[in-house]
Length: 427
Image 1 (spheres, rainbow, N blue to C red):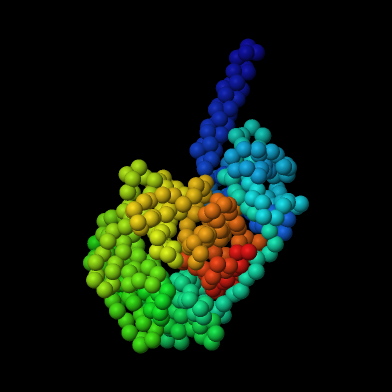
Image 2 (cartoon, rainbow, N blue to C red; image 1 turned 60 degrees about the vertical axis):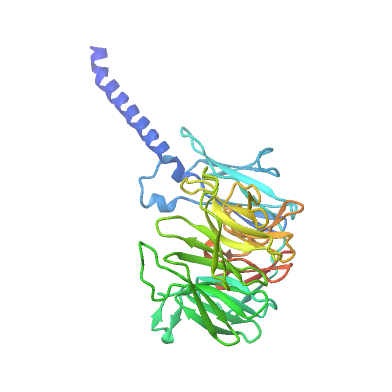
């Protein structure tokens, strides 16, 4: 009778354990959603780390137990793939720490591990940060407009061509439905509107001509809106239009001192390609195809930039077809049509811009957990982080990076919530 009386309790216990086991299995199904998102803000001989609390998910999804970890372990190393040691352990309700007494100019790598009793640990992705003194910056434009995208800077650094993605006109009665190409005069502190429904301007290196893209008044064909290349001559205010069939095109850049333009083309029912057009003969040449190696290592080439000697073309491209696949920066050699990756990376690297002397490449990367601007030195193969210690806001979708000279990089973004064109020293 004793065993008979305890049998129902045993069955209930088994059912409860089974239910708990299923809960744990359900939790594991959401592992990818709950991996801590680690980011770093650099400082002078210091780094501030932050990993996000999943409050957004807690408000929308039944929270698994490890949304509130018991402890977080912080690991660091000066090598990307080895030498990681536990630096410290903090309680689960702590999500930010500052680490001091670091060496400026030396890369350091971090990851964090969330631990909760009875559940699998969750490990963040590795991040890279380089401690340094505060950036030396200059901010242009009045900070009243938002979502700006840099096109380029003219030769004497007197004017910037850029896109306002939320352009207002008619005294503000028309708002936020069109992009516009604008020129900002650094000397006069004035803005000139060049065209509406237009974007991605680029200065010719030898005169006052600007190339950009417009899709004004065009009807979508096969899911695409045909785009025009437009060449605007600032001297005589003349506009020349070039249409590449039914194709959507973007990010035009002049070949230096030549009558040739490199641009990205997105044909209907196809993927991105990089083409060149000789504007005198109208001859068009394909330079880079989508997936030229047929092994998913180079997909959708985008955002081209050309070295000052016209020998090399740099661009970004996805590395495979997986969702969230990292972007890589590639190098195309005009002489022999050679395609090669510019440098190996574990992160998203995009928006390449080669320095005037050809020795450095500026790019946007999320290697610190946030999108910041980095420099790669070709000869010595080392990196330098040039933003990340202030409240910078930049991202790969805001437009190109450009060099004012070999010592200063120009881009669009925000400092302390003030939008504008920003110049940052690389030294």
